[in-house]
Length: 453
Image 1 (cartoon, rainbow, N blue to C red):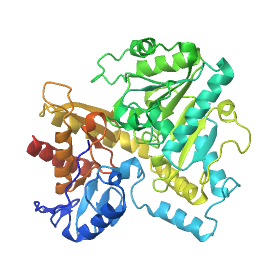
Image 2 (cartoon, rainbow, N blue to C red):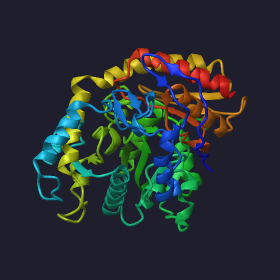
Image 3 (cartoon, rainbow, N blue to C red):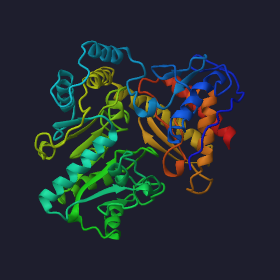
């Protein structure tokens, strides 16, 4: 069960640096009426993040209305890749809204046409068609549907199995949660579809064996014949832990999918648009999937997602048989075009690679001083610190929660611990963060760990 942050204001040490400022008790006493209103009128499931009431956000910093200022290590859950509050994105949204063309269902509109053309122009072959949606879960559902349709069409009704990974997270709709690998999140479904199976993710930590044999053995143990696999879907890196698979494993998986006529799907919802130090996370492996799923950083702001893929796969359904009320919303598309331009023009993927190298260097040095950090995972400007009980791989969720709370009180903002056992401290700042801010915020993180242990 996830812990909840207290709404009882606590006295905390005052902070005043160039980048951070904490000048009140936390949570801010004056913020309680708003927080309590949310508690009253929203379900309990909406609680769980540190009790900070955002007033504005700029670049890599978040501000409240009472004088506090944080270095943001969340990117608003990996959305603000190009930075918070970018004038270019805000102006694109405002201009489209002023045009009074706020929606068009699946009727054509200019921003939608420009966006799909833009995405195809920067994606590698054979990802040459794009289907726009509103949120990541919706795009994942589309990818699942396309995999099964493709499998049945090319191998008969027995070729319907979707293979995913333990500890994976693909969204909160029914299909996305069946594809996920966290049992607690899908216990509500009760009657699970036997055509979704999970195999171990080769993270080299909780799955020490990272050879491709773990995939083939996993299928055998679950009684799955390779010819019955319609698709293999995985997060380009596992969102909960920031763990990447080894390059040889992924290249072997690419070959396996091709050989067995199964579609390979990379869920890039967290990894795309420069986050890992390359424009697309799958570039880290030297492969191209058959389908790629995008969201979060695609617009830097408004709800938008996409499935990109081979034309022969995406064209499987006739007109009007796969639609979405808000797919390709013109205001969201305008935001995405502006955000993508910023990512490309400011070379934010390369910036994430360079700044990320500093981040990982400092995190590794810090981890060497704390046996409670079992593994530092990630690439570019995403990292995960797996908190464990020393000498084991047993998750220590209390430690992770405490570190996030203490960091918030010191002026570094992260989202609540996620992943295996809710024991990962996740780091994912906007890609515009400076080296100065990385150095300062890692210092804060080290203080938080030191106090927590």
